[in-house]
Length: 418
Image (tube, rainbow, N blue to C red):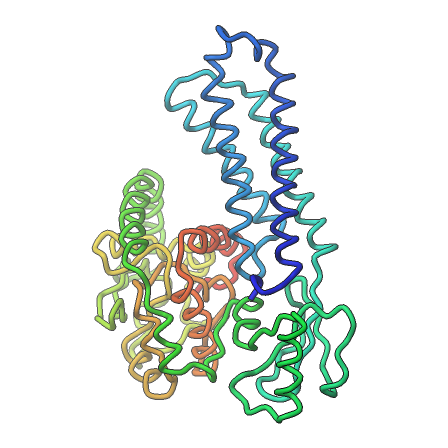
């Protein structure tokens, strides 16, 4: 959607110029910080630090630009996380290769990148406001806060507000001749015309299920290249972080066993990629007989959850055994959350295109989990499906990285944990 808007081109130019200006300021600070910058003989030892700083700065600008393609993402927390992560990675890399680095310069680099890109965020929030006019009828857009967007409803084809940045049209409804002429006039005058589907997808990060057709479902087909790389990254991250999560797993299992009798590791059949069932593993957070009456949805104050179980759920500690599912290839670190077999069989009968969420591997965390809390029924399941399909359609490293950032926030706040 944004590619059609006039202000979007200026936004790209603004981000580029802001990054270039910041690069010059950072280069000037480096020249003042290292007095030997002009000495060819001594500058060699600082080359890895300066090169790494420059590369890290470029990656911060690149990631923030790509993250802006997704709704409700570029917030101070995300900006600061990306900038801080770049500094930490730079420090760890220099230390691992035992090359020269300056802690004071890295501190300056950390403070500057956080403040500089945060300033860009606040400036963008003030000036990058779009005005959209809505052609009446069709899908009703919800009232609420949108990302740098203000909406106004059109009442007549002859009444187009001044300074409008785009017109939103639901192309799934039949327009009258007057409104068809109005849309054609907008195209002729260079006013961007945006479909309701594109607007909702860009602003809300979800799919309008009522508008989904067999023809549109083809767009959810994913390329195998990134999914192959994603699989390798999953394995490396799980094995590389094992010294951290294995001791935590053992402690959690011991505490759960001490609180209540029964098996510590809970297993359950879930539906995975291409609709194939697999066995998922979790640390038991409920009473041992919690499902004696069959599968049931989890709720915010589920009486089946034990006291220790509530704690490990809040911080997602109960999900640690699923690292084994990741290594086996049943799951990924990021993807749609796998549902129980009985629920899937039921949802496939009443929710159109529910099977599309099985195009990719299910994940320990996902887009629906970080944007929505509990799903305790068919209506909530449909809402989560719309979010999952947004992920399936746009799966990428940047989106996975964003979900990882917001998952950390979920672990700290407990929102969405179950």
